[in-house]
Image (cartoon, rainbow, N blue to C red; front, side, top):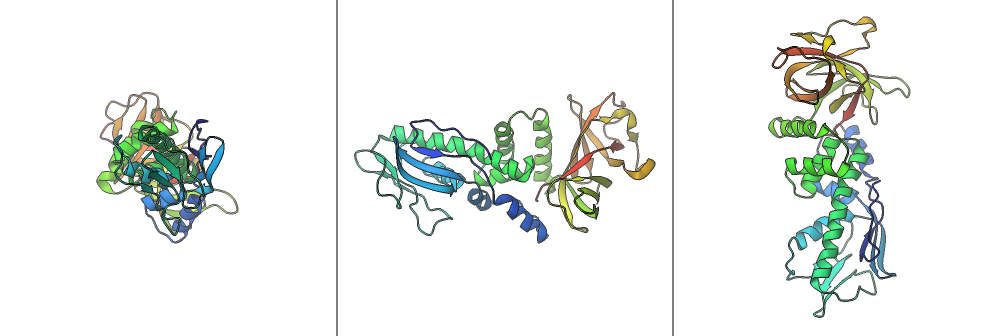
Length: 332
């Protein structure tokens, strides 16, 4: 859940923003072997917070688990610019049978905020004050939505693809927005750029794999087959079924050594015990921060490398040994 602050004078207030129903929705999609990016409607319905309309210390309207992302999007569409709107605002939410759970009305002597379910409204105020209130609310909810989806799904890419349709952003804009909202990610910005661009070109997000084996009991060990070869790692989230085809993000818990990389490998080198995985693909680009962009078929994987790369590595087929791999389903 993402904490969102509010000013003491705010008429529109909200509590902690979260998406508690989103993991269950994801599990349902996985259980039915469906892979689909979150729709705008799903994001706007599932991101919620306790919501208040206040006039000073008095509560005009209060609702728990209110669809604040949906309200923010509706307000953004109603008053995108500073100019005073010609029509009143009546929130037509997918969660309510009738419109008007939130209303903003021009009384002739100023604008009031209320609800069809409330007996009172805020006092009339001039449009500039109400517009500032609306914009403040929208600008609080949008980044909180990105954080809530990221926390609920465990995937930056899923958050980007969710925010894009929900708030009508291009993929590059959504990527920049989510990265800024989550903060403190460092070099992941460029990696996300590559993955999002690749998704736009190929329709493939992360690496599409088939689950070969899963661990017994509560263990999260999983073996998958994909364009990079057979990989062993720890599955993050509900354990998949054997035979399921899933798009995943592959991460490692430590940097990979250039000295261990095998150039020109079309097969996975043998290792003692068989517990080491080998990422295979074409070394497409090496960033200044040491992150290698590895292309395996249509998929791209970002691998943090350490040491000194061979001069001829870019454009070459490579096999990179990885320990401690983690698989994050992108839910796509």
